[in-house]
Image 1 (cartoon, rainbow, N blue to C red):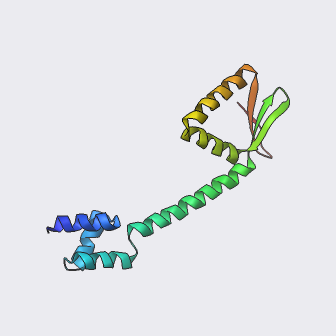
Image 2: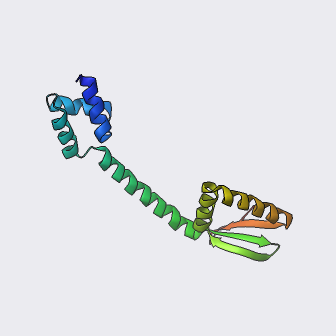
Image 3: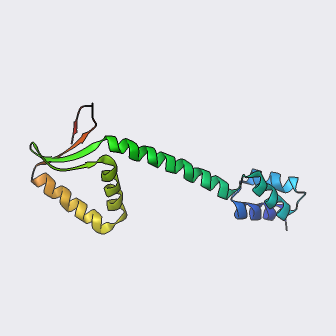
Length: 133
């Protein structure tokens, strides 16, 4: 097995970069198994990085949901509030529409109906001016 094939094998197994895999292979004297063990013990493996990125994304998602609770989305017809939800719930609804073709069609039909009936959309945060759309 060539050095490049060994490096590719290490990269495939642990998701390591070329430099990282080459250094591990050199440290292990060309032994692929020892290089894999070295990288796992070092904690620089793909699974560890993936878990860390997952934790970071979860924290960011929590922050967004918390900030979204501060904002409110209101659908109004004239001065009458027809529908009101926290912005984070509205964002989940939009994500659902983007994920499903059937929901996207319903969303478009709902938007057209709202325009015909002169509905307005307001985004409000306590202590700030209202944004009308």
